[in-house]
Every structure is written in structure tokens, then in C-alpha cells.
Length: 412
Image 1 (cartoon, rainbow, N blue to C red):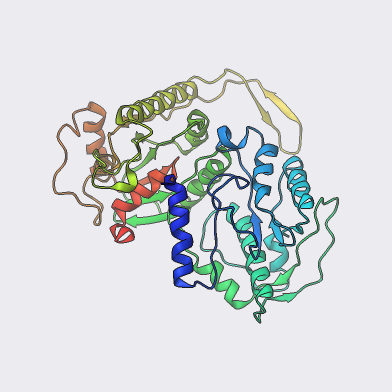
Image 2: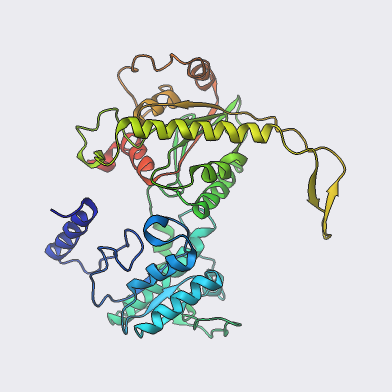
């Protein structure tokens, strides 16, 4: 019997072949070179999106090592596209492509494709999605061209890239179908917002430092345009992190969001996963995942204390000038966060939502859910809030479990 992910990959290929799909988009599981999806000998086109540090025990601890793994999907004579990367990883991708005679191109920014036409509207929020969209357009156009489809977008005169390691992919006018595709894309669990009465759920499966920075930018931008509430607003973080990821670094990036409550729980929808085979994980015990959540709580408390007692002096750049020393103490960090650990996602959502989410309703609260003084006092604050903003992040599995409960129709 193959491992779980290999089994799912084999099952996917079986379904695609049985259903005779016109097009299958296969995303690598981990890395590329040795991933079980990498058995396609002659794909139509390949793409490598923005690289980040993740799965270091398997892929290596530098961007260059990870780029080597990613470049393992390149095939002889099969066009490949990537987006701007740091010089080192980009050089590795170029070398990997040359080794197998794979034509590798660099995607022009989305702005180059917008010139001479209306701006492109993206349904996916966050500045980083523009890079993903630029790559998606090149992949789609390449597939359409090779399959002799009409309407691949009118070519524009492209400007040569300065000191670029790779040839630039063609600049073209996106077709109306491409525009609609970008406008209508839905990607559950990535920069997703669900508005439910006083509750607004912000779901993003960021689990690397790079993606978490993008998540924080998106979350803070999403909060800005909202009209002031008629009463108090509460910000809640629901977080978990798994594997060998640096959870402390991820939590530090979340500090600027100024949460009132930080909630931690394992990636289990219920305390018992016996009724949910997809959530059974035999490599860890419930005690282990709960201990990890307690570690996250302790890390958050330490970060909160560090913020509360900053250095007396700080440097601040003057507009248009060099960095200068401010001869005044830094303003004290006045925002502190209360934190809680729950044994499963369902209990965490029950406490956060306080019955105010019209879709997520439970018949009864579990015993001792409010036994903790923070949970008890926080429950009153949440019930009286005019608006509750909840960011769910740190793990795709956590976001998936939350969606399973908030959007039951997704798993039917």
C-alpha cells in the first residue's frame, strides 16, 4: 500500500484518465525532483512560482537547494515559466533547465500585460497574487498555443529585460476569457473572507515566513476600508503550526495585527478523529499536538512581553534622509493579548463565535469550555462586540478544518 499522499496522487491520475479530462493541472506536493507527482514524462508546460523556505528537512535549508528540487520538474523540450526570484535561486533554476534542454522563460510583470488595455481585476486578494496571475496567464497561453486553440492573446512589442538571467516570456494582450478567469477565480482558504453577522472570518493557509508576511499585509489592508462599528471591535487570531516549521518566527510576524485574543488548537475538527479518516494522523499523538499548541501559547506570551518592554532608544529614518537616532524613548507597547488553548477546532470556534455565526451552530457547549477565567471574561466581551475579526492562519490543515465546519457544503 503506498503512503497516503502517493495513494491520493495515484487516485487523482486514475480519476483524470477515467473521466478523460481535457486538461489536468498537477501541483507538486513537496519539492519537485523526487515528488510522486513528477512521473509525467511529457507535460504540456511547467511553472515555478515564487520560492520560499519550507520542508527544509526534505528539500534543504537554503533557497538554492530548494530551487534545485523545484527545477526537477523541468523536461526536455517542454516550455517552463517562472516569476522573478532572488539571483541565486534563479541561477539554479536556469542551470537545471539547461541540463535537460528545457526552454525556461521569466514572466513579465502583470503591469506589462495591462499596458494599452484596461487593468486586470483579480478576485484573489493580496499583492502577491499579481505574481501568481502573471505566471498563470503564461501557462494558460502556452497550453492554448500548443493545443492549436484560437484566441491566445495578441502579442505586444516586448521590451528587453536589463541584465536578466532568463529570456522574457512574450508580452501579450489578455483575452476576455483570461480576464474573466482572473476575475472569477475562487480559492478557498487563501485570502478568503467569510462575513457572518458580526463575525468576519479571514482564512489564509500561510505557513512560511514569506507567505505569512503576505497574509499580514492582506489582513491589515482588508480591515482598513471597513466602516466604523457602532460598538467595540475584537480581533482574534486562531493559529496552529506543524512539522519542523519555525512557529516563533511566524507568530512574531503576526504581532503587528494587534489581536485581543490569540487562540491555539490542533488541526482536528473534533477531539476524536475516528469518524473522519482524512484527519487521522498516526505519526503524532493527541498529547503531542496539544503540547505543541501550549508551546505556541508560550511563544506568543514571550513575544507579547518583549513588545511591552521595548528598548529605550530606537532609530528612525527621516524623510529623505539617513537613519537617525531618536533621542526619546520609544512609545510603550500598550496592546496585550489574552491567549487560550483548545483541544480541537470545534471547541475553538464555539468560543470565538459565541453562537453569533448563523451557519456554525452547535446544540450544546462542551463542559468546562468556559472554566478558564480568560475564556469566561472573553466570552462576555465577544458577545457584546459589534464586530469580531478572526484571522485563521499558520496551517493549511487548520484552515481546511475550519472551512469544514464553517462551510459544511464544501465536504458534502
